[in-house]
Image 1: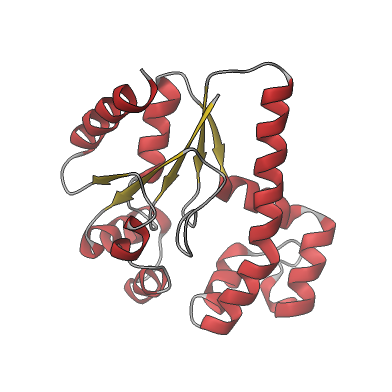
Image 2 (image 1 turned 135 degrees about the vertical axis):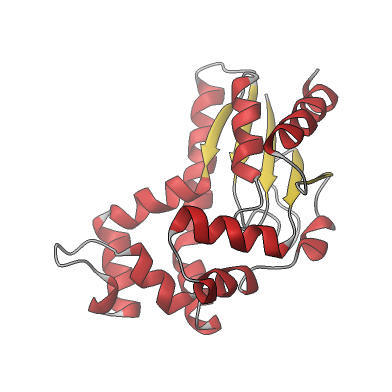
Length: 197
């Protein structure tokens, strides 16, 4: 089994690259989706409520991710606190799922699609790390178009992330997503051949 980490800032194109790898035969673990699942569990939801208050919950008592985003992306201390709550649990769940695949005898490729994989240094969750980058202006347009966020909210999310140049120090490969989706797909397919075949 080989584990490929696909990292990159919000709207960089990392999920597109992970999707290409999936079509080529990989099993994908989406760290964001795992995080969203964890926020739905009673224990994590209660912790988030304790730290950030009732204002980040829906009337039904679930975590309102958009409201939580408004709190944490405008406040560095709050964002770090959320990361301290959620990130270790995400890592534990990723390790559990990879171990489960090994236990069932899977010997193919696993992709860990995780935006924050190498933002604080090297990772031991993957054998190889691919960093997907894109110009900040392009990322901002994508965030506004797909997420319905304001220009200011999009800028906050980009500013809250570690710059590509710092993350690139811990990546084995960098894919620059400054063209079309088809061009990124071609880059990803070529990189797959280098890593896997």
